[in-house]
Image 1 (cartoon, rainbow, N blue to C red):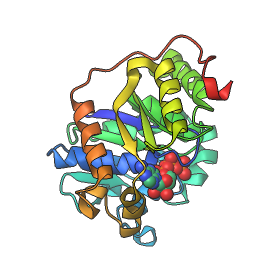
Image 2 (spheres, rainbow, N blue to C red):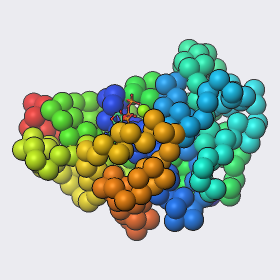
Image 3 (cartoon, rainbow, N blue to C red):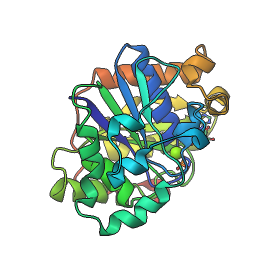
Image 4 (cartoon, rainbow, N blue to C red):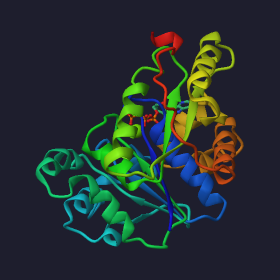
Length: 269
Ligand SMILES: Nc1ncnc2c1ncn2[C@@H]1O[C@H](COP(=O)(O)OP(=O)(O)OP(=O)(O)O)[C@@H](O)[C@H]1O
Ligand SMILES: [Mg+2]
């Protein structure tokens, strides 16, 4: 079975999509079979792979509504071993429709189970909210990867995210673990960044990835060219950092979430 990782943080613009695309591409570059699930109505992962949303047939929306077979919605990408389940703004409808639906938290899990042995890794790019879509991702996942942007309000909301993780573990998915916390858009020149790094390490300890993703203009440019960084600028610090993250994930056992409350998160208290 695939290892399924939900990439989530309800804070917007922290690097979830950039991580899904580029971690996915780095794992695929290691000859692993990867599926990326675009679970965000913004569809940034879908356009980040250069897929024209206006030409799409079935998408993740039809899978959640159970009106299409999962295989019918798969899109290929420029990387042979990487496929995508695309999204369009129609997915906004699912957030309303699912609220009344039976087994509403398990729709994604059921859809992904139908892929059987087809993939080594499934990465789920979550929207910036803790609603029914992110709950579906946490129920379907083996682990949670949390990108945290190195900026002033970075730590805000992490306690709610950890509460949600524990609630899902208690009632819907007891095997869910923390894959790791990933510091993104790090700038060595800023004292604030090293302060945030210390605060995040203080709370999450060794659950923070050793890999830190630097702020890198190539990473910001590549979605505009519909390419992961490995195809757009393979010799860049951004590409190096996501290859390093892939190596770290391939070598690392899963960890338990912290049990104490993050009351001493310096910058947010
Ligand atoms: N390491 C980086 N260096 C420079 N720019 C980055 C980096 N990571 C992400 N960005 C840029 O920051 C913006 C937000 O990143 P991204 O879309 O990955 O965040 P997100 O968490 O998925 O956002 P949302 O919550 O809206 O889904 C994008 O314009 C992206 O290109
Ligand atoms: Mg995103």
